[in-house]
Length: 115
Length: 123
Image 1 (cartoon, rainbow over the protein chains, first blue to last red):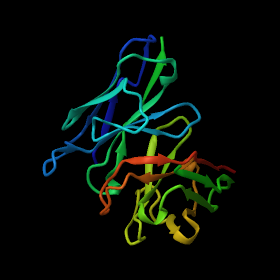
Image 2: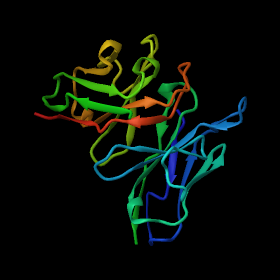
Image 3: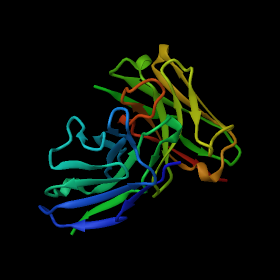
């Protein structure tokens, strides 16, 4: 199984500042035949289900604010919030979808709070 | 508007059974692969089961294999999870989640999630 490890487990950032969350996979999730990274990011606000933010490591989902961006390739990925807003308080999860559906795993989550 | 609405959760004793339902609307349910994902209280996300659009391919996580059964009914636009031999560590919010549509029984990201239904296994 591919293990997804996020860092940090939690962070506090001031409103208007940049927030950066990292995700590392235990093996590459870059599929060589199409040069795509099978990596997604989700946002989960308190009491709500997860919501898709980013797919293919860097493609913003419909409706996701453009202050959210994803980057990275292979085994190392980053979710960046360029200017943190109060409504961004949430737990963020990375997920790989490389291989079969039963191989899918999530990172442990990163809790983002306002400083 | 795509909607997924889970139901059927509740309190059940260890060894008991529950059947979860997920009612889908706002899209052609029969064209999409579907999943169940759970989240134990205060914990992260765990994929537990997948069914493709034609019900011909089904997968389970090792943690539920042999105890849970996924199914779907296109006439009712519904996804189901039959849970038997429930244990305390099955306590979680259970979400249904739609594959984004890559198809061909490949791994996929989930573009829509339901609100979840809480299953509590306790005596």
